[in-house]
Length: 185
Image: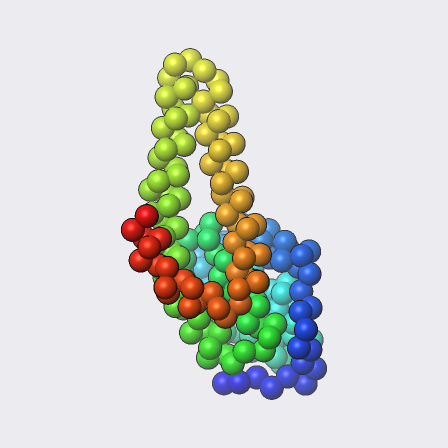
């Protein structure tokens, strides 16, 4: 269903501050986890500041919130990319079906890529190095682990939000073309 806005503004209205607010809320992605909608409520909570700024009409906001409260499951470190793409589409008033289709098509591959890169690569390597140093008697081991792991984590969240927001709808095409290359790497 296409939402015809009463107060549509074609230019970009979201600021860096709005995007950063959504990034900070993304840390609470798992807060409303359940087996029916998975991260759906956390997803809606994380993009709500952007939706409120885009949709001044309460009815339009209500429709957007209801649709973004549906099923969502992806890797928590990489969801800011999806946030950026989707909020950019919301801002340009794309068709509701297109927004939901892009969201669904991106969340699955990013979930798998995020698990492989973060949980199966980054975490074991950084934890292994930290544990090795700790077993040698160095207090620097756990500190190194926490600094390196969380630096990569935070860089991913902040850079992917801005990248996704700039790419907008073009992100789905680029992701589709490069998913096999990324997975192989």
